[in-house]
Image 1 (cartoon, rainbow, N blue to C red):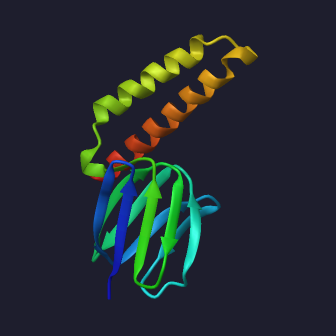
Image 2: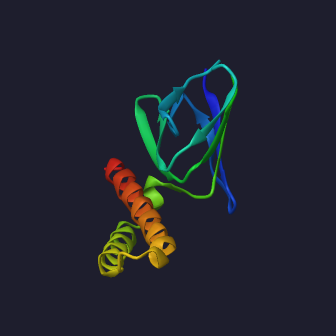
Length: 137
């Protein structure tokens, strides 16, 4: 018996459908959810979501957020989500290259800490997208 998976971002629903299992990137490590799972709320970290249906898996890159799990439904609330087939690999590689170059050129001073953190987020985001895009093959 499948469970309902809904992934919501500020832009709207990224995914909605019945799945056999979902593996989520929890803040304390990945965790899987099957039907009739105990209800809980879990924080998520940036990472990959594995969406299992039958013998196949689909993948999504997701930002940090929360997962609301119940026996019949998993609702993921995140700032960003991209399904593997929607990821623009060339753009993700370019974002990664530009962020790495800017980080390398950024002086090691306290006044640049905020920009350094932004660039590290861009690198993490691009890295996860590329990781997820590789899984679609």
